[in-house]
Image (tube, rainbow over the protein chains, first blue to last red):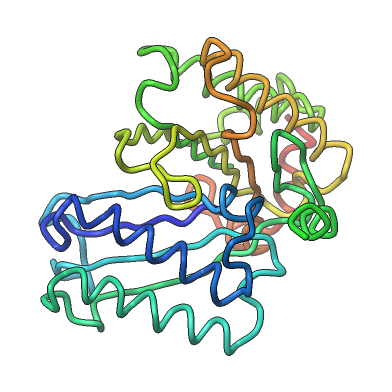
Length: 136
Length: 138
């Protein structure tokens, strides 16, 4: 389940990006009741994109910002309470790691569900049902 | 049909990213029975993101990874046979191109379906039916 964290350079110190991913990963697992699940933990992947200043926008105008996007099988981030709790926490994590400098309204998050059957674990393409069996 | 291929720097020998990308694209066409299709081939597009070692993660720890992500109309990757066949082959391609250094369990594939009617080719918003018709002529 790749998580993509994108932010304007300077919003977070580079060293804090790693900490952000650690906290966001832990938050995702926690809100899905999967803290400590070994299969899910190692398959919860992430990458960080740092975009040069001047190339990130809101309403067509340059701003400093951060975006978090998750791509997951469609059984994740389904319950609205999980959506609200996870995205609220993620926003706080990024805001706090920016030293409180990046306003929360400049932090956006979204979730994308992937096609059932196109998620692979250990090189094996699994259906949603297969993933649930594997992680349980 | 964009393929976004994201890989940690150093996973693939420098300069082989392009070949890997081409093989991943060719395999997609092959599994859909579209090898050589003149309409589809130029519209199989994409980008390669090579990410620095300290910015790719598995289980919140730094790890070498490869992500193969397709964004396609919903008639693509629609059968289980294509899903299984393509994902196995794509995983093998990246594993092999890494000199067998990147373990298969560090190679992830996923597919996202785009909204019907929101596929733009040459400035025209096309429905899945229109896309299917155009591809059948290729």
